[in-house]
Length: 185
Image 1: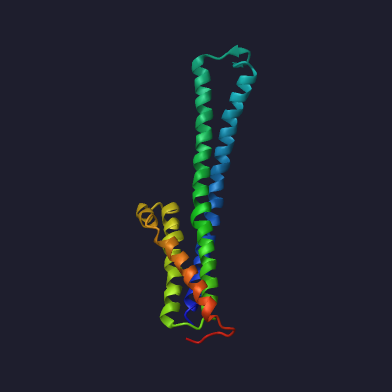
Image 2: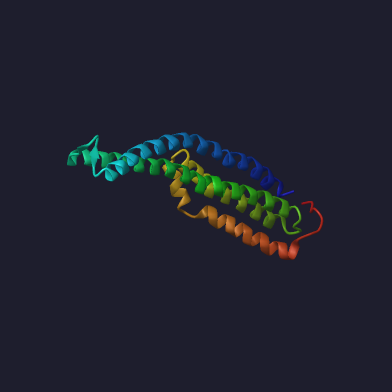
């Protein structure tokens, strides 16, 4: 059964990409700290503005206002940076990896019911695996482990093109060669 490797790959790969949820949860501790820090500095600015830039009935100097403003800006920036790290994982390797894992499982199951030439089924099977590794796999390496070379491979577009080609071929082959029984290759 040619689709067997896609099914096995899909489930194992799903473990890796779904586990990124744990990585994101760990980053939420930093997010919480940054949110508290931002709220304290921005809250102080709001209070100062409401009090006519006076604190304890004393007017603040331009330097004191500038320092309070800087603390607020840096607090917002820190929160945005932590949130960007989480979003880079969430919207990249986590979401795409989960999708490509499930696509491999579905493609593998579908290939079990395709009565077509073995070379064509192998081509479709490998397009899905190579596509997942070259797309969400490179996203995983680039975003989680920060390997710059993975971005270089990602920018070639090989991964998404392979997945799309696999989907197109599987769709075309399914029209003509789908069987109501499991096909033994």
